Amino acid sequence: MNVAHQQEPAANTARPVYVLRGVNKFYARRGIHALDDVNLTLVEGSFSSVIGASGCGKSTLLKIMAGLTPPSSGSVMLEGKPVLGTREDIGMMFQQATLFPWRNVLENIVLPIEIRDGKRAAKEAHGRARELLAMAGLTGFEHVFPNELSGGMAQRAAICRMLVSQPSVLLLDEPFSALDELTRDFMNMELQRICMERNATAFLVTHSIQEAVILSDVVYVMSPRPGRFVEEVVVDLPRPRTLEMMTTPRFGALVDRIRSQLDEGALA
Ligand SMILES: Nc1ncnc2c1ncn2[C@@H]1O[C@H](COP(=O)(O)OP(=O)(O)OP(=O)(O)O)[C@@H](O)[C@H]1O
Image 1: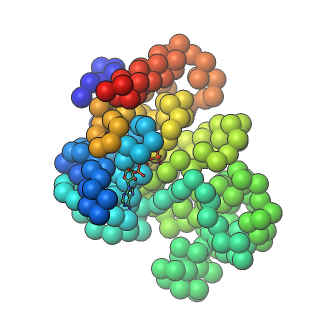
Image 2 (image 1 turned 120 degrees about the horizontal axis):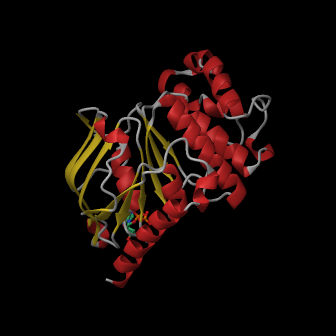
């Protein structure tokens, strides 16, 4: 694996949180080899992204990390314990906010607590949910129903729902790709702020090279299927990142580097 820049990210001195070794995935019924020997270490408080062509196995990797589907071989360890199913310390977010239309914002946010610990515990979590809503700029929208929210507001509510059970790692599958560009940029900066405040360890699947670079400490470039990492690009832009950084020569150079890797993969 090539490393695009010799300078190690500061986060590399931190504690490993997620460790994947030799992860393979075969979908036997359809004869598909989705992932090939994926190795990954995510350190505490780091933000990493995976980028690759459609169908290369990114979502499969995320589902394996979340314990939603098992690897065919290899190991997935989180905080030193194997991931054998869904866990409380893992928060997930998908492209669509998937809020329940018959529950108001507050009731949607405490739903994971209600499912896990019952109605009483969910009620007790209202205070925490209100704090999260304030952090996400949604104070005053507690009793509003999802169909009255904009796309960006719904995704912000979904972030609150992901955070309510206080996960230490966040797995994000193109969470803002359905939003318009301006809202998406804004949400990405919000996501950075939330991750930095909580020292969360985050892993993002995205199709956008710019998004990957502006958010990440490390961008993993995945080959076409079977997906494996072909390059690990260290992003040495300072934090907090700003949208203005997207106009700098360094940002442009990192984007070009990743694009040429993706193009090479596509040609191969
Ligand atoms: N449950 C499944 N059963 C069989 N094949 C699957 C299953 N899930 C995914 N696949 C196949 O595995 C391959 C990788 O799919 P995956 O969704 O992980 O790719 P991706 O990189 O996330 O794609 P995209 O960027 O288009 O969302 C694809 O060929 C897909 O058809």
